[in-house]
Each structure stands twice: as C-alpha cells, then as structure tokens.
Picture 1 (cartoon, rainbow, N blue to C red):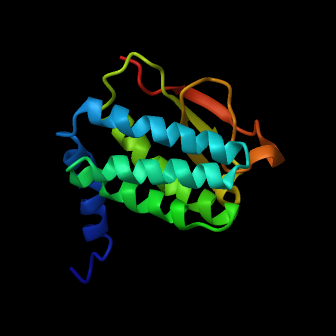
Picture 2: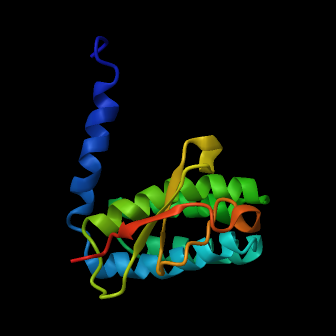
Length: 159
C-alpha cells in the first residue's frame, strides 16, 4: 500500500456512486428545493437567506437515513455557520458536487428540469459547477459582481 498511496482515495471515490444507487429519486427531490433556495440566495448576495436555506437543507438531509446525504448535511452546515460570503461560497462548491452526483444517479422523480451550470472563473480560476431549476444563469459564486458569468451545460435531469 505504501507504493500506491493514491489507491485508497481512488477506491473510495469510485464507491461514491454505488452508495447513492439505492437512494430513492424522490429523496433527491426533497433535497433540491432547499438547495435551489440556497443557490438563489447566494446569487442574490443574501447571506442570511442563504444560511436559512442551508439550515433547511441540513434538516432535510438529516431526515433521510442514508449515507449518501451525510456529506450534504455537513457542507450545508458549514454554510449555516458561515459569517462571510467567501466562506459560504467555498462550502457551496463541494456541496454542489455532491448534489450533482445525486441528480445524475439515482436521479429525480420529478418532471422538472435541473440544469447544470459552470463558471470557469470560480474557485480561483479552477471553475465550479452548480445546479439550477431554470436556464437563466445566476452565479452563486460571484453574485452581483459577475451574476451571469458562466455557461449552461445542459439539463441533467433529462430522461
């Protein structure tokens, strides 16, 4: 194992989709509403509204008895505890990655569209993705500073 220190993290990463496979799409649906409220609050530069939406997401995630949502609750709690936009927006990126995984698999039960967005400038130029429930891109990583920075990558809830 000493010769392959990357092996364990890689195996854990590969196992992530497997643990979400038995999560019900309707459970993913319940997580999306507070997530979308959080995304819109950050885009609107409303930290307190974002913290309230994150608290709602924590409560919803804690109500789902499944290991695939534990990281969502933890990252959302970081946003609840954030006192500055920078902290909240940094925690929003890994939270979004977890939500994207869930929307892709197991998916959603809703007929509503879920759009994958991408801002190449977010996270210090590394880029970051997020989900929205409409095509009108509003960037949660920059808010009013660069509200429409990014691209729509597509509807990830398509069947």
